[in-house]
Length: 225
Image (cartoon, rainbow, N blue to C red; front, side):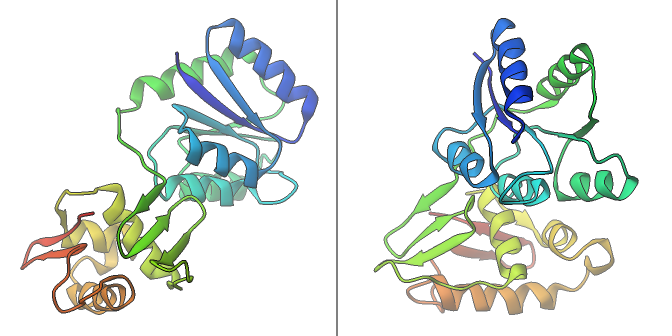
C-alpha cells in the first residue's frame, strides 16, 4: 500500500484529505507541524509527501529541504500562497509539484498518481550510524562517537548530503559542483578538494587515510559506511 505523508495545520482539511485518500486505498500518515513531519518521515519513509507552506513551527520550504536532504520521495506542495516567488522557492527547495488552495480533489489525485508514476524506487535512509559518527540527515545533525555535536557549514552539509544520497556510488566532480555550487562552477575542482578536506577533518578518525569519504582521483568521490 502506498504511504502518503500529509503535513498541514488545518485540521479540517487534514481530515478531509485523509478520508479521501484512505478511501482510495492509500495509507495516510498526518502531521500538523514540520518538526513532527520530519520525525515521522525519518522513522518510516513515505512514498509521497504533501506539504503545506504555512506551518506553525517551520516554513514548509524548510520541511521540503529537510526531506530532500536524504530522500528523493515525490513532494507536492499544497498552499494558499499563489505568488510566483512562493512557487519558485518551493520548487527550488526540491518540491516536484505545487497545488494552490482552493483545489479540486480530482486534480490533486491526478497529480499524486503522476508523481508516483515518475518516482523511482530508492533505498532512502535518514539516519546513518557508524563507529565514528551518527548522521541524521532529516534533522541536519551530526554527532561524534561520544554524542558530541559536530558543526558543519551549509556548504559542507550540502556536499555530504549529495554523497550520502548516492551511498557507495561514485559521484563525479562535475555533478557535485553543479549540485552544490551551480552550473557556473562545474570546473572549480579546487572547491571540492578544500571542502572534502574540511569534512574529513571533522568525521574521519584518520583524515589522511579516509574510510568514509573516498576519492577516485580525477573522477569524483564516494561515501561508504
